[in-house]
Length: 421
Length: 166
Image 1: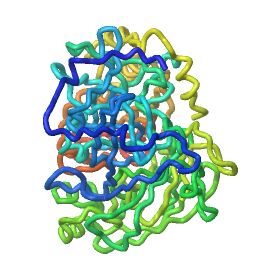
Image 2: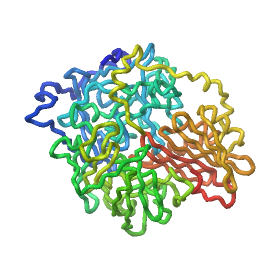
Image 3: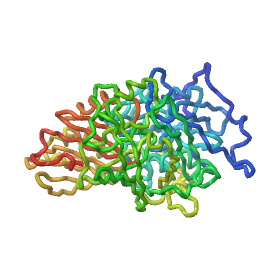
Image 4: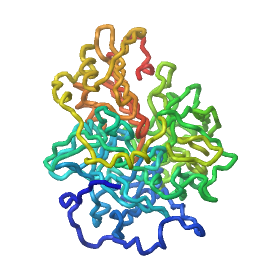
């Protein structure tokens, strides 16, 4: 594939020292298909509190990813990467890959940058680079990744920051990167592609070295990509599976499994319900007489977030701002309904977050953590704005399948995207 | 969302340039004082529409009217206008977050301060929920499907349920 890359000598300058450089190419016996030995498709993940000393990232599932300069054996393995079914693409802190000189995407006199907005009012900025990404036995070759980094010599354009909080560092991010394995192949999609013919959104920016940045169109093939779709096999979805937890725990372990119906370990069981998603990758959750029609499953959210005006919220100045603080444990249930009408009930609990955090100051895994989403209750008038955000606690004790839009699915299953559990 | 032509585009886009600039001249020509949606007069809706290159539809509702702007990138912004002609709330949904400075107008600086203060109080990801007597901001969703709203509690017309304002 012609990519018209220029190695940028300016931005990723040489940093030497005690780096974790590994010659990845030599260690595996080839990454392609091997008929007698199927590709290893299981990656361990862990709710571990994250990589920042003295800081606990509650209910964050972390793993490691090996990143290589394309086509080379110059690689670096980065731990503390958040596994996120709610976003698309690999994003890694520049400070976590100091020894890698990844080729950046460039235009005439400009470099390409990527901007991600998260719903909590934070954003990530950094250049778009190309890398080979290795996870378990899988290899995604030559796709675009975001290197999270504040710019050198200029300010982040306000159309990216948008008034929001800059989390372009390890402490604020709470991680060394984000592995976005959600239900789409790329982070922006057609709206950013030149073929759309529209003014591109605030996702890609072409910046001169002096910081003159303009929003830019980027072809789908150059957009920051869900690495899974670049795997030669096991490329149609993922499974996130976490151990069952009866109560909070210091850590929790699980697996990120690649592919759906491609190997003996990733078949959708007949007992699972398959929920197709709507045009915005959402489904409906019926809860407390509300039809929450913009609901979704997101391993990158660290609690159950839903509209319920009857459960008290923890004080904003407490150790648990933004979570629920009921007087006693609330045992609740909700019904998930796919766009295809398939449904199932989910039982879940919400405990007092201040009590949980105070009583268990060194724990990272909390299955009964919840918080508000919107205020009061939803009504019939605000369709599209009602949402149940099924965060990481939903994954404890479940094997959750997430298929990727546009990728072929096994016979008998609907076209992607859908969830199954 | 339809099929994603991702794989086929890879071969079709062997182009001279990796990416191209958007023509943003029109945006640059909109004077900054036109940014005044929230708390501003109903006339400022037009500046927002122009910036979004969208179309606008006006729907009357009990006690207020809704000016709905649809942008070509599928972002929908709803501006809630009181009988006195004041924008007392703005809601949005779509695959991208709209220009907050444009929509929040004179409230932008307060939004900026509140968001950054809240984000510095925890690590992790969750819906945004800023509640103050002066203004309320909420946002949720996920990459490629965001929604949110901001409103001025003191200026919500009597009898209007804030749950409607999305």
